[in-house]
Amino acid sequence: MTLEIRNEMGSIDIAIDVIANIAGNAVVESYGVVGMASKHQVRDGFAELLGKENYARGVIIENNEGSLDVDLYIIVGYGIKISEVAANVQSTVKYNLEKTLGLNINAVNIYVQGVRIINSED
Image (cartoon, rainbow, N blue to C red; front, side, top):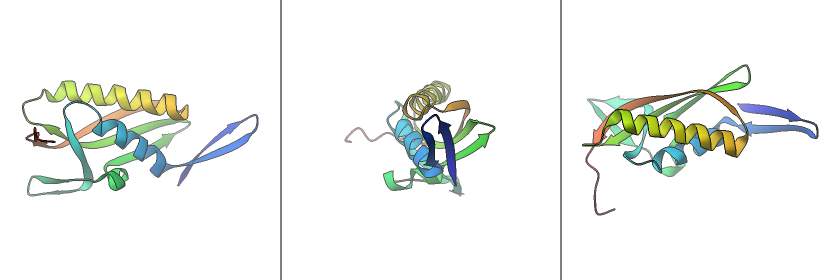
C-alpha cells in the first residue's frame, strides 16, 4: 500500500512501511521510551521489543482523505511519567512526519504495551 502525493511536476508514491519506519525511529529516540512493541503480540502481559528492521509492525497508518492517523505501540521506562512520555512521542512523531514528508497528520495515538526497567548500561 502506498500514499500518493501529487504536485506540479508529477506524483510521488510513498510506501506505508517508509512512513512507519520514520515514525518508529522518532519513537525510539524519544526520552522514556524503551522500544516499540508489536500491535498483535501481547501475551500474558509481556510485550516483545521490536528491532529496528521491524518498526512497521508496531505502527498503524490510516489515510483519511489526505491526512494521516498514526497508531503507535510502545514500551516505556519504569518510573517515568507515562503521560509525559506519550505527549513527547506524539509531538516528535508529528513534527518528523510533517517536516520529512510534508504530510498532514491528523492524530498520533499512543498505546502503551508495557513498562520495563531501563538498562543504564546501554
